[in-house]
Length: 132
Image (tube, rainbow, N blue to C red; front, top):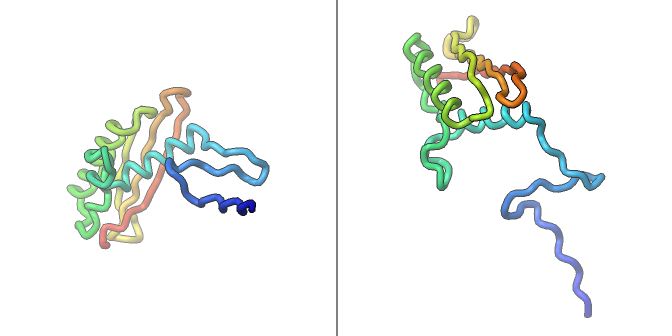
């Protein structure tokens, strides 16, 4: 009596990529990997990851804060400190946090950096609503 094969699980441990229809596994480029890492660092609250209690920036802590010069300066400092600590593949050139001209509760963030390996100039931008 033969058994039918079990269906392949959608998730496994460790979380590994699944091959596409051609049987190949796609890997992000260095540039894309760094952009994804920056997003993860800034969105992760310290204490959220097991075994890495200090990892992350936790930008959400600024939700419900006033859009003032002091708040924007604290956001800039948090981004700078977090990326310099947790993303060693980049050289941070600038972090700009400015008011959104048409939306008083929003800030614009522009992060300019160079990839250490290639020297390529890169930039990531985001908008953040402080009003919650």
